[in-house]
Image (cartoon, rainbow, N blue to C red; front, side, top):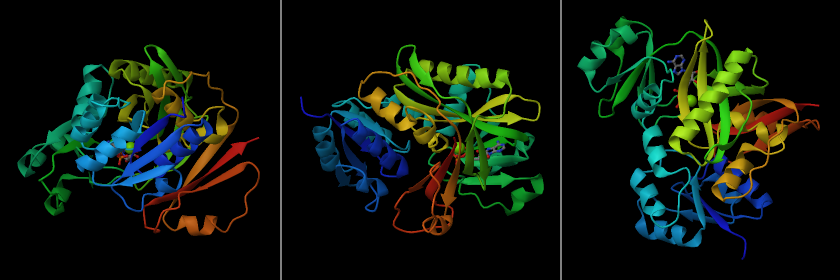
Amino acid sequence: MSNPTIGIIGGGQLGSMLCSAAKNLNIKTIIISDNKNAPAQFFADEFIFCKYDDNIKIEEFTSKVDYVTFEFENIPYETLCKIDNIKKVNPKPSINKIIQNRLSEKDFLNKNNIKTTSYISVKNESELRSSQDFIPGILKTCTLGYDGKGQYKINNENELDNLKVNFENHYILEKLVKLKKEISVIITRFGKQKYEVYDPIENVHEDQILKYSKIPAEINKELFDKSKDYAKYIAEELDYVGTMCVEYFIDKNDNLYVNEIAPRVHNSGHLTINAYNISQFENHIRAVCGLDKIEIKKLYNAKMINLIGEDILVYRKKIFKDNEFFFDYQKDTVEKKRKMGHLTTIEK
Ligand code: ADP
Ligand code: MG
């Protein structure tokens, strides 16, 4: 048989890194994206540019691939189902449907006795006014938010008067957690009780955007084990295939809450490229394409810094040491708050 082809929906940097991992496994890649300038096209064997409701292009994409996955979660559910009827999409669309919406995602977790921040559904101004128990809090759109987009921090009730919220969207109001730390756990599930779990990663956000990640996370043994166990439980419960990330909050009393689940490879896992024998990207491709599961091993402690906006201009001119790995996402324009690249440093 000739080399298989994986179709990846979405064309951002996560797509680029998935393409590079697939290439090393002799798997061909087709990226489909609604962004003409999608950076992943420079890493893929083929690129299809179209809107996600363009049936003709979607059919063309589906006919050309053997396996299908995605690199961001906000793909119309109908599109995923249409593709899935012909070529299996992994992780499966029903998982995406739960996670695409912050409310159904949090309801799912709490139904499974996994603690999240306290939250309430907010559909209009009067519901917001009567949700004062959740202030100080953050109002978040239920769908389509990322990197803090569609979020409003509310410090006190007086701020409600000046808040300009577009109530065409459905929101949740989440109580603010007094954070001690944020961590994430990345897991790749290959099938029933078959998974590889990376050690917890410690994350620092600035302006609600991830800025730094490092391993090992400085947390106690109980949190270390519990965060990995939750990730396994969630992946098993969702019957997940591929790489998934669980983002956690740890409060001042060492309580562990799930912040959110990413049904895909994750920014905090970029350091797995250089710090592990098998990266989160390679593992995702392996799981989705039905390749062998190989035991993961941490090779180095490591830290990563995200290069946001104009940071990239400075780093493009730097000379790096042999324990530093610079990634330039080759995006068309430098924009404020846009992730432009990252640098991973391993401890040799
Ligand atoms: P996104 O989907 O944009 O990543 P998140 O819900 O993960 O949104 O929020 C981004 C960041 O904002 C979090 O990683 C955290 O630093 C901060 N944050 C979000 N919600 C809360 C909360 N309820 N309490 C404290 N900090 C929060
Ligand atoms: Mg997040």
